[in-house]
Figure 1 (tube, rainbow, N blue to C red):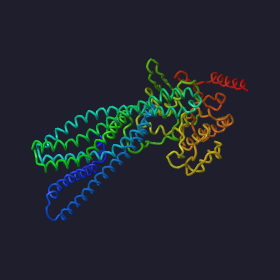
Figure 2 (figure 1 turned 45 degrees about the vertical axis):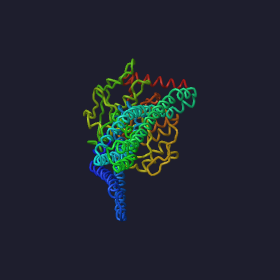
Figure 3 (figure 1 turned 30 degrees about the horizontal axis):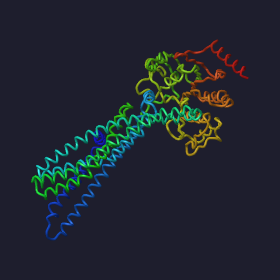
Figure 4 (figure 1 turned 180 degrees about the vertical axis):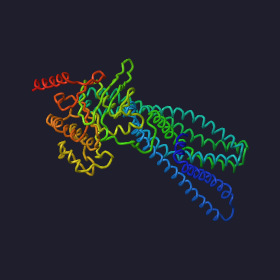
Length: 556
């Protein structure tokens, strides 16, 4: 079983010890039955001594069985803890392209459902191991008592297992379909949460979403979980009935056909009754174990980065040392969907110099955001090179290269922890300095280096995101439509005061913007059009500024 192999590879010594305890407790359980059969049933005189011995055996069995299950359960939970940490670390180490291809809903489903299924499997694993160990030990004892009875019992159990296997196969099929349904349900959850504004405004869309998408996913999930429970119930009751049927078979063979004495048949019945509970418990644990097997396969299909302990350390910190950053023949393409053509960016040739303020303009879908991801190293070029002071970025150099950038993308996430370049807590004086200039000193609540409440307007959240980027003290500040959600007064303050202030502090600013009437604040003006990059200079730049000013005057 893959779960056992995974735990063994994680901690072979602890698992071996836990399995050894389980085996001892199973052998001792059979020993208790043998003691009852050989000593107590036939006792004729003083029985007090036997009673003390029997009590000692029970105490020893309690200690061993509890110790084995506690040790195995604790080992399983430690492994799940390690797996949960490892999975999140693998997500953090996986490329942006791969994460976007997987989708947030699928990743969330794995982080919740798959880890939960594996945890439940480890909770049930001790019952399965104990049941199997006890069964093996009991069958050996039954073979010693009577080989003819044992042969028929084994044949009877073979039929039981065969039918049970067919039921378990159907159970496994529906558990796999159930896991696929969970992915779709998480996608529907994401749609309900992320699209809450649109669904509130358009109740017809809400109705169609609810009736045709969510309800279909929920109904599919219900059908598969119902069928899975049905086959599990049939399998559990089948095992229970067949174990009880074994007792009747044994008495028929012993008393009816004379295969063994009544005393041996009674011992057989006692042993089988003792096996009944752990065997049924073992069958009851199968759904959890099968769900864990499906979840492990699901985690494999994510194709996340391999687990690496710790975080890679850059070979050197380029902040404050570099002079030029070049994109040389860089290309990046998105594959087409079905009959649609894909979209490509490049080839792009661009040079960014230290201390510049560069604006990038272009229409929707022109490739601006893709260029920003290529520039910052979030996307790796499919062809061409990125050079820092003439040195080509490749392999482990990307780690150092990305340390140049702090960003606020349009789809930013606002973390609450305020940290500096090397991950240390930001100084309160520096925090207050930038909060004052961002006009957030009275609105943002900071406590012990954290933002206490991020439930603010989008414009204010963007100001706090910019605060986080500035505190990181990176050389290059990458802003994607940052000013789009600011009011006109603060937008003017940003372009006329904050940008010059950042430049004076040595920042290189690369800003995607549609605020054409602030072109004069840029040292250079770039434009993306159909995936191609060009620089607007001379008359082109003057014309662009003139058009913007004329549009503003007409609007006034």
